[in-house]
Length: 166
Image 1 (tube, rainbow, N blue to C red):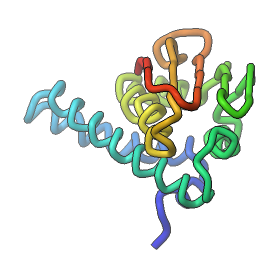
Image 2 (cartoon, rainbow, N blue to C red):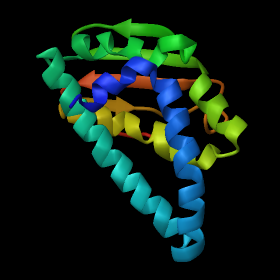
Image 3 (cartoon, rainbow, N blue to C red):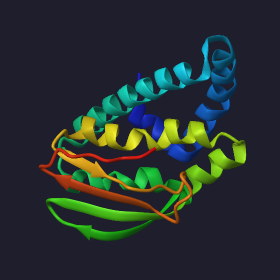
């Protein structure tokens, strides 16, 4: 059986849309029965665990877990024009870029589930890199999903402080 990383061959944007179309009505029904906030918190925690495991899987697949290797994985998230990135800095200790266009955010908005988009996509980012290498930290102060003009991704190696809004 293939791992989660191999499922990305269909494109992560399309994968997230399929997931969202299945999960949204299920989460709505669970929210009506059990309380929406509680259900979303369980989903958030579960998505974080999944992202951490996927980060570990990617590090194993690549055979390395440094920032350079991590940077090479950005193409998977950008496949099919899903993200437009502006690289600001990249060296052995940092990877800094802005996402200037995010089709993930547009897709969740078009489906009318921005709140789920933040949980199903944005909340994965720090957890994924933590699973990939716990010595790499993501600092992000804004996202397109939140209405900002860009998402500011700042990865640094050897630090532990993380600020990542959903």
